[in-house]
Amino acid sequence: MRADLRFKLPEEALAKSVSMALKKGKKNRRCITTINVDGDELRILFDAKDTTALRASANSNLRIFDMLINVWEVVRNAR
Image 1 (cartoon, rainbow, N blue to C red):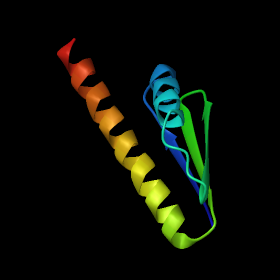
Image 2 (image 1 turned 60 degrees about the horizontal axis):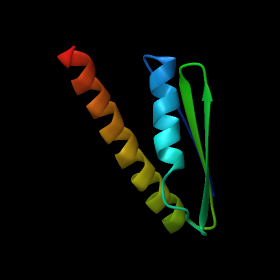
Image 3 (image 1 turned 60 degrees about the vertical axis):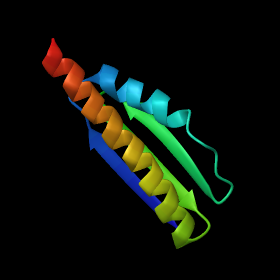
Image 4 (image 1 turned 90 degrees about the vertical axis):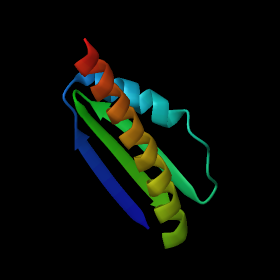
């Protein structure tokens, strides 16, 4: 099972920061997650053994992604 998610972010620096944070995440034997940055585009590729592993890994990474974007918006608006 595979899922390929791409996000266009407002800044290249944000894409790199999110990428680094997601790469520090917990390793999973049932799902391999590949994270790449191309300019301001973030790509997350999930390659899982089954649907349950794909869903769990995607949910975990997307929760972290959402939190990072929210923090970035708060910091940006505080300037």
